[in-house]
Length: 220
Length: 335
Image 1 (cartoon, rainbow over the protein chains, first blue to last red):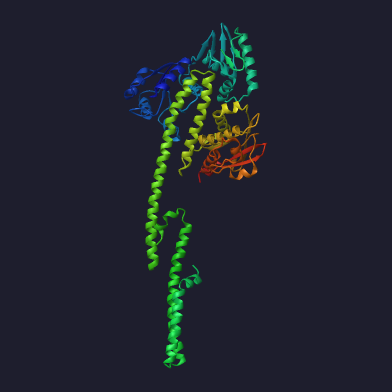
Image 2: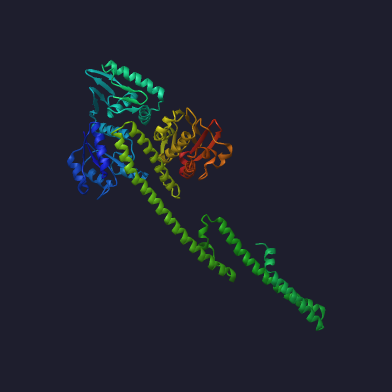
């Protein structure tokens, strides 16, 4: 799956490319904003992330131009968060609208949702680290030839740790991550979830996958 | 305009007239005229004088009564000079002229101030949108390299983001336009979005949200409501004791529904409650904690008023505070 990013801020471009590649998407972008529509159409991407404030022409114009020739899904990402911008984006054929500053998990979730809806086929969204494969859409973890189903919270915890592999993630940050996906849990619930996750991981043969850093947090 | 007031105003002419009557009476008496003639002549003088006085009184009374009625009935008092009719008497004409000129001057000044205000608001909105780009980049940089210190920087970024948001809503609250969009949503969505935005602060305070009966549909502007609820949550976190519990409770009525947000924090002294929504008011808690700006609740109140919503606060010291927001039914927006 290839995602084309139309964004004139190089920092955001750079970080989006890292983020998207972490989740297994191919990434392409261009700085030739005068002919950006041609580049988008030529790239044969599966989805476009489009900023509104751009040099030469604004995102609305680009969106209209693309729509004349292609039905490729478009997500508008912008700091102009007035109701007018939102309505305008959806009216000219964008599929979704996310205002800055956006939460990276929300962005990834929306991308997954739209790709799934548009291409119907199961999008292969997996994270692999130290032999453990996490399938984000099926909510499973597999190690060797064994597979186990994960609950929403367990998947959230594991995803956060694997995406930031090697780094210690504090407990507060894990709770926060789960809050962002509408699970308003407290510390006790987190403890229960961690225990269950450990148990499941040892069932499939990865008993010490999750490391505890006393007083700091967890890491994989 | 009472008759007695008018007579007092005309006291000098009345006195002069009486003096003239007395002197002419004496003169005519000295001339040896018969009393009947003298009285007859004085009656003619008196009648003419009174008639002139009454005529002048009625036309002025009519004019100024109309003037006052027009003034009271006008919503926008600055239009007064455009609407009153020109009076028929000299002093009225002069004042009319002056009023028109001063009104025009005032309206020019008003327009000028309005334009400056508008420009400033536009600048703030632009600035807010500009600053969001680096905030987004920084969030993404952290997202790609989460560790103990970057996560702490992320928390600080969120604080910056909240201040920026407050500036944006402050700019929006100062204009008369109703630039919000009413859409159907639920209390649950509004509360959850606001909680997500302040998640880290609540988690650090070991806070726990409790939801009660929030599956109530409401018609409101999502962004504005999330901002308002966020401000209230921020206050609860700021003035929390240990083990913060935030209770969000919805209830519906015939003509709308309400959302109560209660905490178990330090509460507010009774004396401070009536002024809690005043701009810049920080109160007892503000003095004790020194973190208060007196802007948050003021903005909540102002935004609520713009959206036809009501907001009220009840509190008991040491036990906690409850903020209640009333949402009107959809059809109230249509009128």
